[in-house]
Length: 233
Image (cartoon, rainbow, N blue to C red; front, side, top):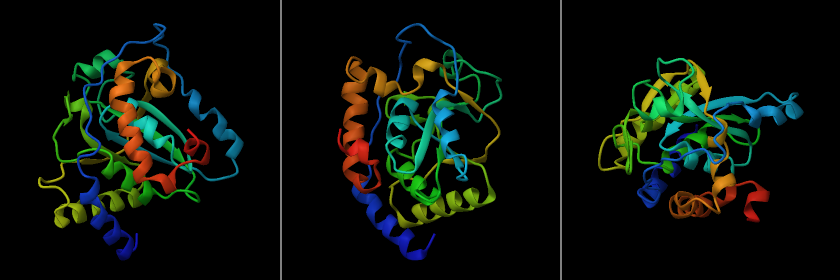
């Protein structure tokens, strides 16, 4: 990233800090389904001639983060799931118990010709509090930790640089505690977690009182980066 781009981003951070606070994120399947498939990546095949890239972020409740990243231009899919732990094929209940080592996260497939990894990092940093260890708002536990699971050396370097520069800029009063670790494996969450806000937004109080306000703030801050179809909502 260029020095001018980074400085512009750093200067804008204090204006956004604190506007994306999260509350407790607990829920049950709407239809009892616990099966898990990576159904949201099926349409990626249509773009098979374009070299896609992958990013994996953990920044609190994946219901919220999935809803945000899905609206970005260039993001082909954002799948909710678990990463960073030691338990194979963990369930939501196991992850919530904090015994698996996994974090709730999203795995993003994106077209780098439409959106860069730097831009994804900007959204990541601005839409959660990276200074609170193992918690986001009322969501407490290692499963809600702030983390970047990098897929390439370049992603590692960019994430590390952003973290260093943000800490030195004093954008937050407290040090950033975001974990930056190599990606190992991603387990898609149960089907009822996928596109949770889209499916439950009108009926679930959590969606109405927590996710909807968070999305509205995101849409104002990142209006120029949103998909055209989302702008009509």
